[in-house]
Length: 107
Image 1 (cartoon, rainbow, N blue to C red):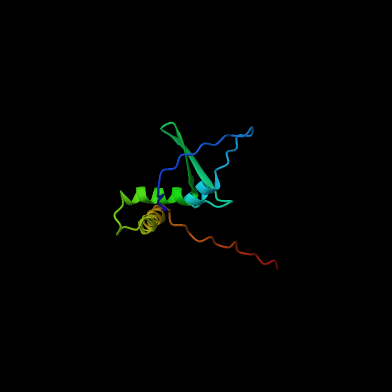
Image 2: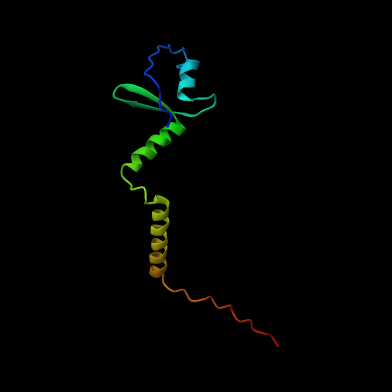
């Protein structure tokens, strides 16, 4: 995640439609570009704004605190799903193949 060099405080006003323009130098500092999707969160009486990339990186950092680096969550999920499929297959009753109705020939 991009580390900011300094704390920057700015003020801005909402327009009548509730829009807020983030000054260009702040967008540049954050690495935001036009069209970027931003995530908004309220916490501790603050509005936090993160790009989706930054929010995802924060989530990954949080997960890394709880999952050792040698463990692949994707591999774990696949392994568990395969076990579940085997259990489901064992629980299903064995189906008999359907027999085709015999055709009677008329004489």
